[in-house]
Amino acid sequence: MKARGSEMGGRNFLSRGSRAACRMRSAALLALLLAFAAGCRSSDSAPPRASYPALESSSFGTMRNVSVADQIWFGGSPGEGDLELAQRRGVHAVIDLSSPEEVCPIDVAAVCGALGLAYEKPVIASSDPLDDELVDQVLELLEREDGEPILMFCGSGSRCATLLAIHRASRIGVPLEEALIEARRAGMRPQDELFVREQVQRLAGGPPSEPHPSRP
Image (tube, rainbow, N blue to C red; front, top):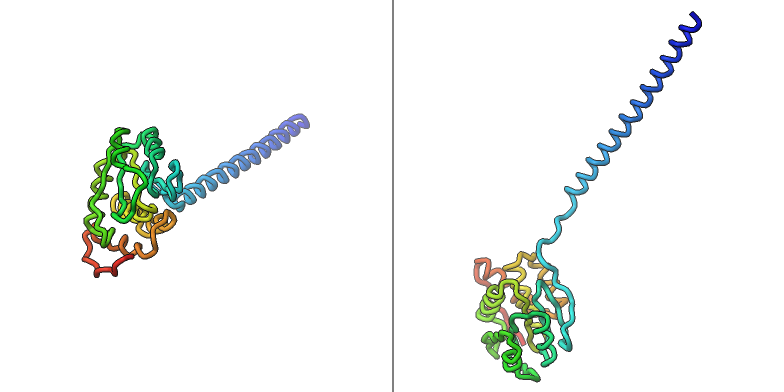
């Protein structure tokens, strides 16, 4: 009897130990499930990543005020060495956005021709370098290149920043306010912000805006 009682006591002890181990495993499993659920909620609440390429400060030889986004470099007027660098970087087209008053130190068209680079010169009115026609021309050129590396320039790079902001907001899907912040950082003049807003509204099919004051 004593031996049997001892055997039963041992079984009870093992049973209690098994139940304790089971409870520990259940608690651990519950903690794991709660952690997984919290991770899912955190992932769901995290803001989605931008699906468009960022506009960043860059360098391009001796050019001043250079920025780049999605293989589109832009800045101030280039020198001959900068165009040779463009060829080495695989640039397909050079877009000249200089106004008639902005004189480049080299014959860009001739150098591009010698290097085998496409040279594009949209029509720019000297009285008002930013207008609907220029925007439409630049957007058409950017769409025609379809992702090929491009180099754009003007006297200081400011006009390029303004026009690229319109392109990014109206064609790439960058939120307008973000495109404006990018453009200001890239050298866009404060007085051209209204022009960007008007053009994005025009291209979206919105009602025409009131004519803005002439820009210096």
